[in-house]
Image 1 (cartoon, rainbow, N blue to C red):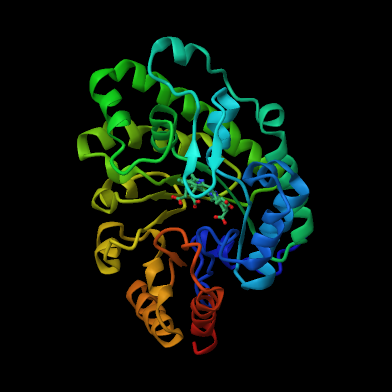
Image 2: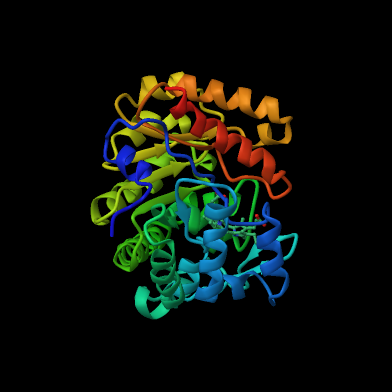
Length: 343
Ligand code: CP3
């Protein structure tokens, strides 16, 4: 089957394209009334994630309704710790919660390796179904959380501003911490490779809480596992997004991955200078989308010209906020698309 829109695949393989491909982190979600309509009929978020027909339906919504150049499978990074033996809940207006956490070697001993087709069958089924339903319209992106980010939730038990408990474990129980991180790493490798087999054409690794680590901790605990994943996953180009770690860009640039995600704190010219020759993804501040349509278009133009021609996947610098008007997201996407028409 030939891809009708293979812009993302071409940019990630290093080709020059007529314009940057554009997609939006968290594009499948609450910004769309059509998503909220599906969601409101269900018992909760997990029912949506665990029902392949529904996950497929909401994955396609932003392709149809926003016109993005890629679909990202509707799922969550928290399915991996659950598959290892630590179930999560998603509490309305609060966020994720783990009733049990990892704090000792005994807790760690209760975790088990992940067999994706067994423990994450619903994701694999959703991936197969979505790839087929897309019928080559746009590439399908699979994803996972990076080991450090998953570790944060497993140790902390929920969201946190500072992740001080997770960081305490790195400082006070480094052996236990390394063991947990390695187990997450192996589960993630199995999971990402299985996603490729099931139809994912691009992968993204989210190190959403990389910014909680100082350089010593980042280099010891996060970076080597990002590298291990880059080396052990094959069959699809991998985008590494380490949010809040723009100051680590030289080290990230040494990873064998297809592209690096850039958050909105990182000045584009600086990113280009510090990761020369790399494909970069990002990085409009999502809060720009609270502005007027004209402001959105102007900021998007500035972003495009700062990245320059080639080697760029247009996106926001983090996930879109749920209360943003979908018309502003459309203006962002349209502005990127127009940049190709105007040559
Ligand atoms: O469109 C897409 O991006 C695909 C779907 C997707 C979700 N979560 C759906 C979701 C993706 C890629 C994720 C990744 C994810 N999940 C990350 C990494 C990306 C990032 O934002 O840094 C993280 C840290 C999580 C953990 C998580 N899941 C949190 C903190 C929350 C609650 C916060 C919130 O936004 O409410 C979730 C739940 C979640 N995952 C929702 C969605 C659409 C909201 C749940 C709902 O519909 O009620």
